[in-house]
Image (cartoon, rainbow, N blue to C red):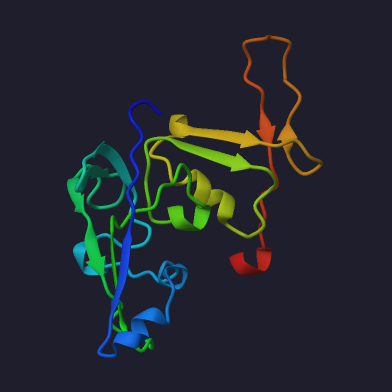
Length: 181
């Protein structure tokens, strides 16, 4: 990826009426606790394209869904779980994002993209998953599939000897006829 690298550190702290309570919880424990503020529109699964990394804000564009194309500024925010069973208040200051170069099929449900790459190291294991994968793209031309060769999927023989013919690929489509009845 072109450009300078940038490191953003989160800051975890706790507040408690008992000062000794602060020493009972190491930073490693605090770093395992997360909270996302869905009221701001940035919840688990919102996909963004980062356009610019600034010191105190990240400029991004929403990649899919009803707000696709909308520019957003992501500031560092302080998050605190409201319904925690912990004997103190946890405060975490960080950017509310996680880097991803790919998403699972389950995370992509409900999303629509111009281009979709489907990586199939093996056939999908459940009814309808292949359809969901293909239906994420806005057009047939926007789909690319990498299908790893095995006895259940892979490259088919070309139907002609023309080197310009595309190689055809097959995979097993799991269908439960009981579900369709």
